[in-house]
Image (cartoon, rainbow over all chains, first blue to last red):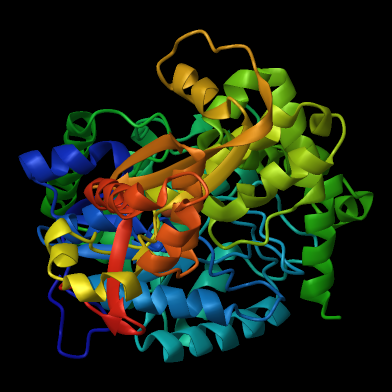
Length: 285
Length: 268
Ligand SMILES: [Fe+2]
């Protein structure tokens, strides 16, 4: 898909991986065919030592995007200015192509649950998030990407679907979207919605990045564990998304049970293959 | 309070202490009840924070065993919910918690082991700074030596331990049988530091520990020599102090040298 002058989006980076500690040395020594790396911002918000040593070196070889887990954009607590200052300082150091976090909250009353807690999809929450995204974007001096999270509960007070909420946040706050295909599948299973309906409701001009990942199916519900290979229905959903959005920077998240880099490179090749096939087929109207 | 704020408080109260009020806010489905759904968050929270402590405290974990370590984590978690944006800092109060909370306070090696492991963690990602080299000190003219003072490298940490916690750590790290815990009346001085991204630790004799602590407080070379006279004869003290200095420099424990008050004579 051509990116016009007016496009909100940066050109796709191709196929990336999450930068994980066990792979640092292999990456420097073998310079694998990964188009870009996504780093967890908080892991590098430390004074110095190995984390920043490796980040600087890998940054010199690959484009980097920053992905945070602690912005807590939906929390009713005030925005944490100190965190934002550190985030901005890290961005100045490594000049990421973009910065993302999650459409969620992580705690209130100065507690951090270190989890991506879902928001109620209400007009009130929407106004709250939209105002805060504006503030964050002003501080960072760039558009933020917000990612849809996996969730296990639905709030009785929700007034709209998750996809309408996500779309409205992005359009009203003028931010971008990191669409996690696996999370849509997981939440679809847990809440009984059609993942394709979700994807088809997301504005094409705002999706800058995709996430792919594996999960654990517990029978009655799915836990989003990022410790397994990507399953076939998620690959199929990825193909569906590619047909709607065109080429989008895609990365595979593996946070636990981390295999040798080769195994993830093979999975990344599978993503390339799925993408080639999807782009060869016309979109299904 | 906003409706959103009240909802988030209720959800957090469920995760932290199973407060019931949240249940009515969540839809049950034939697939899974509200309670089952909420419990996914509550148990993931515990697992995640316990895992963070396991990462920081491998030797303490090995010393206590899985079950006791998990119990400790739960007690710590109740006393210290995380307020950090970065999970990295969550375990920072564990040593004090162990020292002041029964029944752990009765086994002092636990708090010391935690303090030692935390210090190693701090050394791991402490600020980067170039280490002082011998040539930089050699360049300070002899007449300026008495007034010379120093700054330790930011990754240096000093601990005084009554127990053999560092030896226990070493055994766990090498997957050897841990030595029995010991408790000395007088503490032994330890230093933890980083050189070329690797973490080191060693004990220090009483005089060396005193001199190093004095250096970190900003004492001059002359002050350090004067103080060392408690252990070393006046005739040999300057040479002894210079020897200690050389050892610290070669280990990368020092960062800056000031040839006189306020004048940074480091060349990096
Ligand atoms: Fe994701």
